Length: 212
Image (cartoon, rainbow, N blue to C red):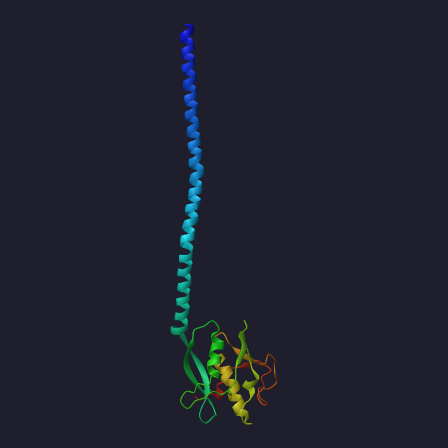
């Protein structure tokens, strides 16, 4: 009986060692899979991001670029500009297309100053006139800052000066957000535009200079 008991004890010890070895292998295997799997997932995730992000950014940039070009080349809006007639005694409204941009009022005034003649019509402002800045306030006042060359009206007839001033005012007040226009020259309020027409206060639209 002693010999049989000893033999049984040895077998039980072997079984326990085998079971412990199995449990240890399972634990090590699970730990390896968990750690290795997370690492693999992270690496795959990183690779996936690295592969997709540049292409996605390129697509977005490409679309934005195409939209910008399309807007500049194809999209426009109609505006009304006031030019001087051939006799230089009144203003005549002319509809033109200008690029549809954020600062549409400034773009419109720049188109007025460019000197593009419309048949017998011509700009009321002298060559070299430029818009330095333009801002529309919430009360409907459009403050437009011009360069000094804009005030160099040829001749001494006050009507030429009036046509230049109201060419600006009537063009800008075509926009529903503009109720009146304050003209600055080189950032300063001046008493008269070129010696005759007062511009030290905001001016309202005046259609008396416009040919009906």
